[in-house]
Amino acid sequence: MANVAGNAIITKAKAIYRNRLKPEDYEELLKYNSISDIVGYLKRNQKFENTLSDVDEYSIHRGQLENMIRKSYFDNLTRLVKFVSTPDKKFYELDMIRREIEIVLSSIRAVISASLESSIRDLPMFFQKHASFDIEDVTKAMTMRDLLESLKDTRYHTVLERFYTDLPEEIRYSDIEYALYLQYHEIVLERINKYYKGKNHEILMNMYQSKVEVENIVKIYRMKKFYNASGPDIMKAIMTEDIRMSKQKLRELINAEDADDILQALSDSDMSEYKDEDGFIYIEYQAGKIKYNLAKRFMYFSTFPPIVYNALLFLNDIERTNLFNIIEGIRYDIAKEDIKKLLIY
Image (cartoon, rainbow, N blue to C red; front, side, top):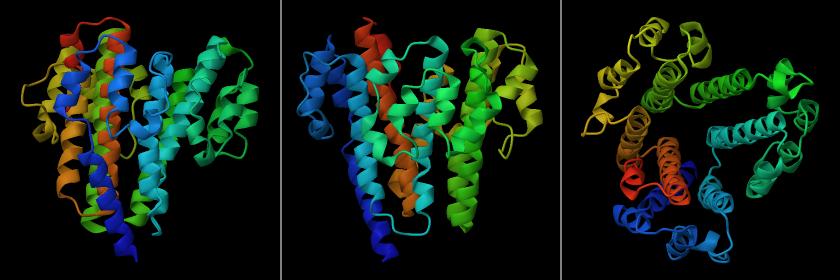
């Protein structure tokens, strides 16, 4: 039975991947100059036709469209995960935890800014029945006290109560963000270690730790180049526990005289085989390209369901980001050649 379910997961995941947006789709989308044109094209695409079939392309705004796109990817994943009946089902639920963290952080930003309109307007209600808390309650929280109350009996309450304050201006958003993702980091490692052994354990751990390593390098680069952050402040903002890169190597990157020298860290790492053949254009693009090439390799060649599923998550994130970059570029009238430079496929 486990083999049947595993084969179903692989078959469904690879079918979703085959139905991905192709280079010709991106070329076509880049020809358009309005959100309504984008919606019209996506409605005709098999990947989005069910989600967008009833949408009026002339009245939907950008935030609503992005939320519908998120729903499309989420629906595909939930249909896939329903095939999981093995003891490692909790591994497949990791993406749900990541989505919950995004909602919690969005609500904290709304409390800080005292602006709930956008948070409620783009509420991901499609996710409600899968969440461990009432999403509407969380996104309507006007104070930290409200937020803590709406998150009681969840893992997030334990984190947030350490940072409680009555004053929005005293909310330590960066510290909360780091604490939530540290908790997530620990959960991922615990579940990989619990459910998998041997080569498959090694591959899953490398996939996840490669992602963490790339994200660390990007954060170091951005904090040095754009915020002139101090070494201790950067170390407090990156993931340093239970990762492959040593703290000494991280400090070497942080202490680099020129932030652009950090780009070379990606080239020198054991992920260099996944970098873009055109060299390093800018760090966010290259970080995405490395994750894309890594995931694509496992999507094609792996026969282990959790690895294929994990690869699909990576590829979905990148494709969704591509669409959001196109939508935002059109919204703000960015030159098409500049939008195209952001796309990874």
